[in-house]
Amino acid sequence: MPSKEAAAARAAVAADVAIIGAGPVGLFAVFECGMLGLSAVVIDALEVAGGQCAALYPEKPIYDIPALPVIDAAGLVERLEEQAAPFKPRYLLGQRVEALAREGEQLVLTTAAGNTVRAHAVFIAAGAGAFGPNRPPLARLADYEGKSVFYLVKRREDFRGKRVVIAGGGDSAVDWAVSLAEVAKIALVHRRDKFRAAPESVARLRALAAAGRVELVIPGQLAALVGKGGRLSAVTVEDLDGRRRDLPADALLPFFGLAASLGPIADWGLALERQQIAVDPATSETTQPGIYAIGDVAAYPGKLKLILTGFAEAARAAHSAFARCRPGEALHWEYSTTKGVPGR
Image (tube, rainbow, N blue to C red; front, top):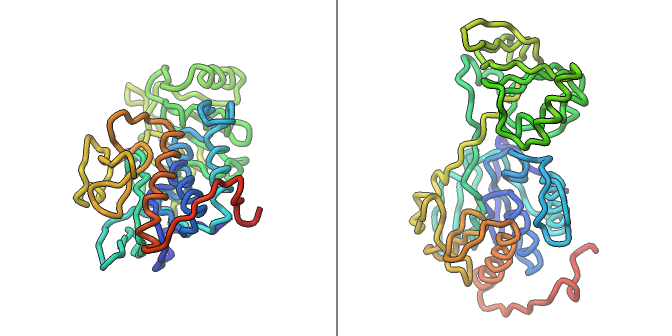
């Protein structure tokens, strides 16, 4: 598996194609580019690959991937990473793309971490846009972020044996409360006794609460963090009458959703339609030469927002971009069944 570089590691990267967005469509674009002999670098604002699948519903089943009657979102991301791995993509994660400039035939991207990426083509596979967590309004929150306050779970084992407070009432909060209850002591804080999650997940949560394996703090809301040096010892919660109490905690997982925005991409002179980017459906190219949009962020008449649609758009963009990346070179395309995949 190729290394995924943290935001702090500065780099100057060159590739045929720069892919903005490490969700399923962005990952599949690595494969499609690789099959044409094009190198790729993948940039994402989240610290892990997978986009919404990783951040919002890693354990949710997906039923509309061809030949896979059911697969959970995290499993799909893992398989897509495995499929892309033979082409050795470079990953720049935990950093948003801040600027784009043209230098001759090259497009130069600059990330918030100060990394620069030079490419002949750019694929925007940003889904609904760059994701950032909706943070709770707590004093000194930044002191604890990344140490004992986390907005997504990378590995369940990281929380084994710990006291974990989860806040929220959506799918992420409920699903992780159920999952982490197998390895940690869980308290779930929510402002009301109604959850915005799948009924079967809520039923499992309530069964765990009845068995004493999850503490439901309802109604309740986060009020303060207790600890020092970025390490929590407790989370203060407050009920609707203003009464407070401390929940012992080693970690806090606030799942209040993710805010999505195109961010600086909206200033690149692209034709926009309600946070989506208009493209030529025949090529996936935007109104700016060399910049393509694929997946949910792309808009054209008759568009279906399905993962498999994004997969097809990734293939279309790769074929269209080949001429920019290999000017004057004929594309001798073969099916994967006859061409094979490197290393297999």
